[in-house]
Length: 183
Image 1: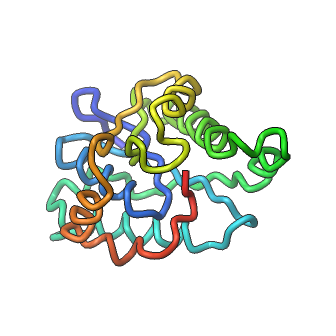
Image 2: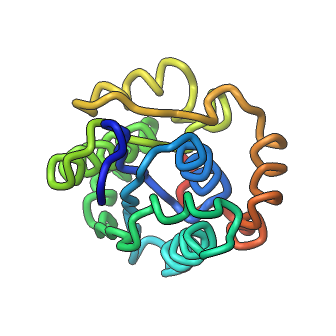
Image 3: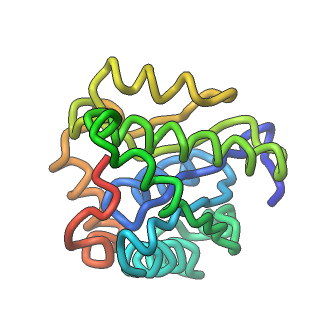
């Protein structure tokens, strides 16, 4: 994936509503994006990965909601299995901070991919205060697991604004259903 003026980010995409909107916002602003999905199978089923693939294909589609910008989303979705690694966070001593540990793991994996593809940034669909790992303190704890700046274009939006934007993009119906990465 070619960067444009140093604007290459590794995006963590979950199959939920937020991450496709975050990707679309950054691509619309001229960024190139390489996408990473952390598969939680066998803890969850294949639905999150399937929704991720479908959303990204929709955004990349010629004549789609991003126009020619869709081509700045790398066609290859990188998928890393994390189900086994996540099982260590389900022990009673660590369960309270499960989602923070999970996001730190995801960021570490995204940094490794960023090294491989030459990206200087990570990109997430995190939104301040939405769920447990997205409180100000927990976002700080998650960020410390990254050696790169994290772009969070949805940080100050409320959930309804994100849903409205997903509807305009055409990704909302693809992403509907329970968030499988409710972190």
